[in-house]
Length: 469
Ligand SMILES: Cc1cc2nc3c(=O)[nH]c(=O)nc-3n(C[C@H](O)[C@H](O)[C@H](O)COP(=O)(O)OP(=O)(O)OC[C@H]3O[C@@H](n4cnc5c(N)ncnc54)[C@H](O)[C@@H]3O)c2cc1C
Image (cartoon, rainbow, N blue to C red; front, side, top):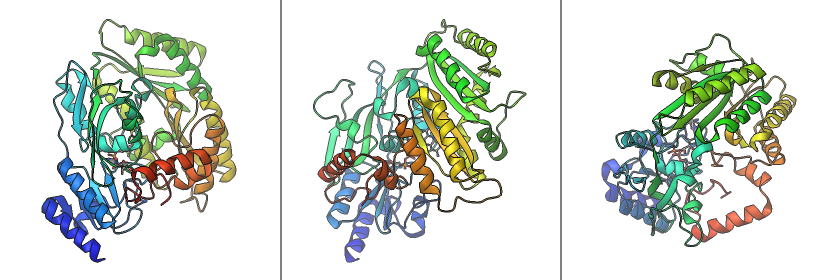
């Protein structure tokens, strides 16, 4: 207790009244986005430099007090929260410097607290893009995106966060700083440390800066929303598009009518552009650097073929950026629509893309057996087989009783049996550690425990996330 009081005093002196929050001032940092996780912290540290982060981490290390890094707090697995009361939350939200992009090398150095949308905006004037996009980009920060190895809507073309990082600076659990801020893609100078910290969910260190890979901004874009009769047709049409124009596809996102219905009912300002509703929807986006590539014609020709074969029921191609944004919102507001509907169970799995229809069919049947009438809302990233197989209770029922872990285990095991993963892009956080214990092999479990032990022997960095405490 005395140790904790000393630590709080030390951090208050180090960071000042804006940099160290406690009591009611810390409340805004203490619950997760879904309001499922969170414990009262000793306080929230809000450093402004790598040196300050290192001093905070060293002080926590010396006092034996656990510390959880926090970005925009949009994570969906409770990973940015404390597992027990009394730890320190380390918010990177005041480390928001964006360097000048290196136009020749197409990269940029940023601090960990930079919000993704702010980075997109800063690059607008330079003819470059950072191609990671997701529904939470107005709040999610670079450090959090690295912490979870975020995927998002364009992973199909540009990869996940780990594929977009060239270099990293990380404060290690004892306060030492690893400067790995190299700016090259090819770097085989030993184990891939930059990848190790990516997806570690703050359990191995605090990312303070990163060098990110950029791409030339596309000057040519075509976006369409299509209605589709069934999942097999979704897959067949996706395959057709890839055969015709694989190199131009930057997004292929699907959702179902139940998800659309919840989004339209609960989220303000959405509009549905087609006359008829359908069981499934596919949002396709193609981009190219050159205005000479006839993207719209390619998309319209595929659409015509799809209509003829019956894979597509109807479709609309956006004619300007406003329409494009309207279409994208229908997809991006899926999580918000379901959150506002009420209690839900989220599952974030991936299967080899060709097996998605099999997965959705079998998972729907097994969920119906576990809880008759349960409403399934699969949506996600068609091109990479990542499905958010979310559940809402049967009509007239407000919850799932004790069934949450049974659903998670069965859905995760099914994904695994089809060659996929029970955790695709959101990570494990606190919500999936037991699931991981049940579904990871003993070899994977012991390798991961050995990595944690080697880098954080005191188990002070975000204990209880990814691995049991
Ligand atoms: C509406 C909505 C849509 C979403 N869509 C997607 C999607 O399409 N794809 C996807 O992948 N995710 C998606 N997410 C999940 C979420 O946005 C991502 O997980 C995102 O990467 C979290 O970023 P954050 O800054 O909010 O991190 P936080 O939630 O604050 O933290 C997430 C994890 O990263 C760790 N962390 C944070 N900062 C650092 C740091 N500096 N150093 C080390 N570790 C750190 C935390 O300890 C925690 O373990 C969505 C979330 C919402 C709410």
